[in-house]
Amino acid sequence: MPPRHRDRSPPPHPTVVRVYTVCDESRYLIVRNVPALGCGDDLFKLFASYGDVEECKAMDAEDCEQFTDVYWIKFRLVSNARFAKRKLDESIFLGNPLQVSYAPHFETVSDTKDKLEGRKKEVLARLNPGKGPKVHNGRTSSQASLLASQIDHVSQHINSNQSWDSGESQSIHQIGDPPITRVSSDQVC
Image 1 (tube, rainbow, N blue to C red):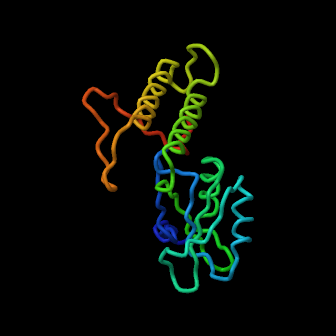
Image 2: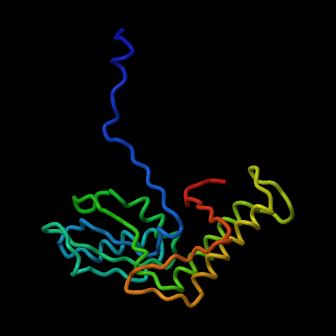
Image 3: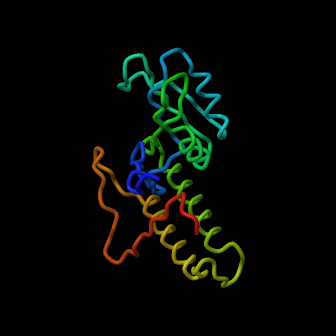
């Protein structure tokens, strides 16, 4: 029997974990490394198998590798885009590994507001599945209420009439604001 130290081999690829916040995620996706074979309809069908796709367009102005295209995909729901990204990023499509990334910079203010409201409902459902002061994994309904008020606070800032100068974002955090808690979309409560 060989010594135990020879049994351990390093993993073939290092594992990298990327955590996305609700602000990083989007119903808009950018898909890179698509073979330039006029396969937009096939790509649309592939992504539509993960949810309702509203639009799928080739992005001619984007830089890309030779013989590849870049596509912009708009899902109806953020959850569908999240699922499609998780399943199709690094998957092989017509011989090329797809590179799928979120594109929150295409969102409108109403898209962002809807996304935050949807996330608020998801988190509250996880924290407080029943009515009343039940405890769920160590969290009480009062903690759920605190989280809901923090999400409402962020939504109010989005709805306020703040100016944004030529791409330079102004800080919306003020003294006395409650701290904002980040919750991953894959986190199980």
